[in-house]
Image (cartoon, rainbow, N blue to C red; front, side, top):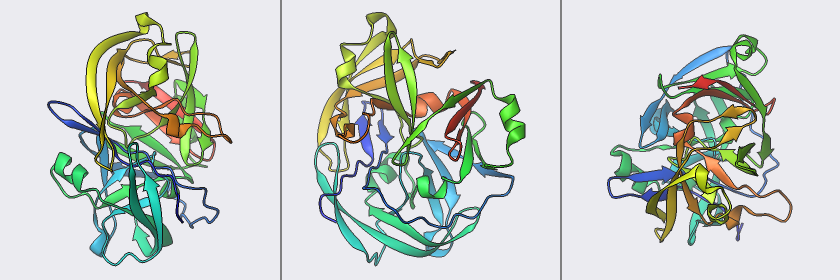
Length: 305
């Protein structure tokens, strides 16, 4: 399908490291895969590397380390052999690249799934960064019927049966609604007098905010840190200003200070949907114990860590 828009694996390059930010956008798909209902509670060990949460998944040739990414719409495999499907043209932040949409007969992650749609991508630059092989990315299609609890401090995720997790909800300090824009859970936050719509993206090693807000947000909410490079899958590099954000509120809950990078997010703007002003990634998830309840479209927060 020529002309497909796809944002994938944006990288910020710093003097001491590279910070991956994965965000993937594809056209709306009407087919749905069958996702087996999880047990009432499934604990999934997380391995955090460069701000990315990795989980073990797959079986046979597909077994390996996968990025657990709420910013991805579906399963993505790293340069799989003999992937036959629909060729697509994808767009990164600074250029285009090719991908293939195809179907995997079977995939295993805590349960066996049949006929799983997947995309191909070259994740070799992520492998270089994290210094180990990356088999792929687990996205929305494999999460959409569950509640995903994230506890970075204890390096674990918990998959909850969306109908049997009342015990956890009673302990939550805050409950906030989110909207699903395509596959992305989007919450409203307040910075000064401005309301921003930010996507929850576990595949992001840094928070991003559209550059137009750099001059609009109150000076008292930002401590400027300097500029860093931003690199897309297409390997082109642009620059963005970074700051420590000291005044962010989700509803009535003030969030801890966290680093953000300001960059051009005009690709998020659509004539048919409200704009997404940025995303919350590792600097957010590393400081909070929370769950993303997809069926209810609610964000549960137990506390800041």
